[in-house]
Length: 296
Image 1: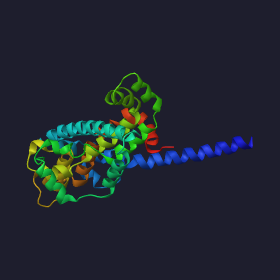
Image 2 (image 1 turned 120 degrees about the horizontal axis):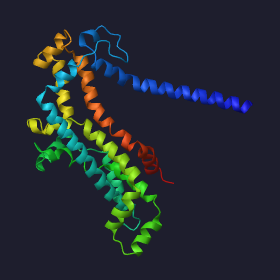
Image 3 (image 1 turned 60 degrees about the vertical axis):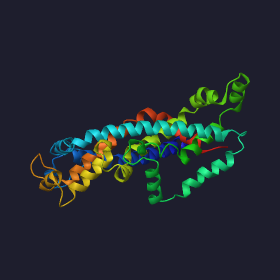
Image 4 (image 1 turned 90 degrees about the vertical axis):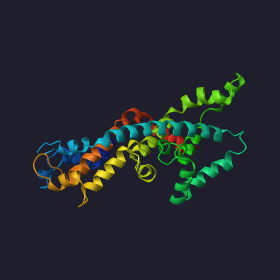
């Protein structure tokens, strides 16, 4: 009886802590959603919690009227898909090679990739490198520099090293080559860690805007969603901004906006698409990260 009571108390405390963590995690996001859907002038009065007090789509209407937004959205989706797929595939090939004990350079190459995680050449040499490779004002700047990731290689390599060696040996006995073993045996078994790394890569690509600012600032057809939202946020806060900034400063009536409402709407536009990916990869997330990050 005493043991059941102690278990009940422990479960109650545990559930209370989990619910509390859930609330403090979700509340900022829900609050921003309410602000983005509320009238800007009414929002300035304060007191918005999880529901809009005076419903208004003015902030979204203002943003979706921007002609570059659709182009930026398409480019962001393309770079996210292409960048995530190419990075995961290339990193998994490198990880498979480094996981083979028969490969004589596995240790020095692993140390080389680890070295890149701590030492960088700097922004100016990186810019000159991209220019010499002909990647300026080019869509390829979005995925070629990130085609490998030292972190992903290490995690995937650790996961592959934990696979039964007997499977690979049996495939070799049957006459399968290394590439066929990699494609038909290793990749299907490594889906959890590959899905996890794909999620990390997709989030990085979706949120990136600095490369657009540095390498593709003059080509409107190569703009990205995050870069356009960053520009609009800067213009809404600037005293010398154009039409969007003028509307943001007026903030009058149901059609007005403010920098706060624009910022909240931008957050929703940027966050919701990538959040829709999580449910499809959620079941692989914990398994892929734990098994790929720990080796006994």
